[in-house]
Image (cartoon, rainbow, N blue to C red; front, side, top):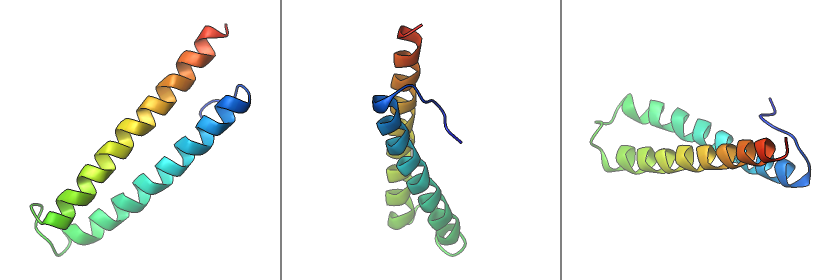
Length: 74
């Protein structure tokens, strides 16, 4: 599903957002596996959780800049 599409810059942002979403999903699945046999305070669980948090922030930054760009064109 394309979140936005307004030209070459947006296509590049879309690709970056798509890669980030794929990585978030990969980390989510890995965390789900780990929590089945590791404590929530396990260093690996914490590391992956922090990584996923940073990717979610980055995703929202990209999506937000795409929406701002689109709004400024109208």
